[in-house]
Amino acid sequence: MKISELTGAALDWAVAKCEEPIGGYKAWVQDDLTKGVLHGMDYSTDWQWGGEIIEREEIAIQCCYTDGELDGWMADSKKLNDDEDMEQYGPTPLIAAMRCFVASRLGDEIELPETLI
Image 1: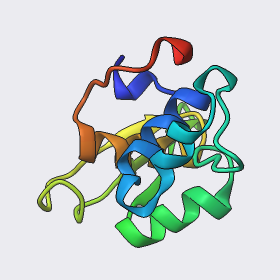
Image 2: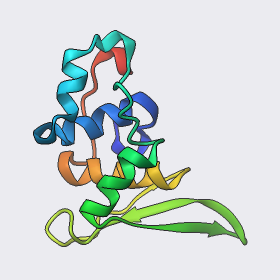
Image 3: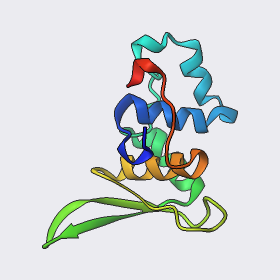
């Protein structure tokens, strides 16, 4: 699945996979994947979890407008991906930022467990 299309539990799972050295992915592995829960690690909807990554990885977030109307959010980081821009978009700041983070670690596409598709 394209990183630019990830939302909800699938995006949170991908972020946890990127956070594996910190223990995020282990929460998924130890849990029953069919439940699709992260024990409160809702990176794409909870600033407590996603905000920490945004700060640590220096991800910049900005509003996108079309004809004067808010059209979504763009996130990028020069720190990620060898100082190259890593732009991702989303309907919320956290979704855009978490897509940016995942894309910088895993590329443009990822294989998801069947339970998350």
